[in-house]
Length: 122
Image (cartoon, rainbow, N blue to C red):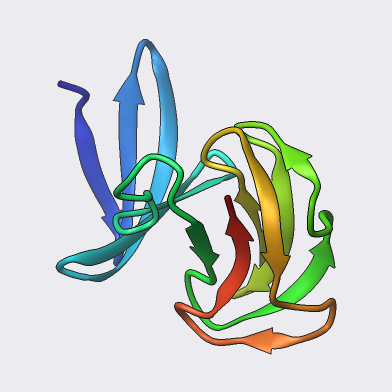
């Protein structure tokens, strides 16, 4: 198990394989999200059935800085789909796996609220 040290409200230092990362965690029980090394992880972001649509949502109130995909586009695990800005940080919304973009539900410059669906994947 990796050593974890709380370094601030919602911020933790994780040491693993000789490297350190800062992980930011927010949300409530049953609906947590974490930001680490350019990735956003959502507790409820995974589709429950093979082939089910997957909704990628805003982790917090944010402004959409850049939309990098269009409906019908194939994406691979880790591809950046949308970049949002919150608390003076740019947060990439990345593909959790290989998929096809079903819909894009945001536009550049738009202010989005937490849990707002930004991209639907199939």
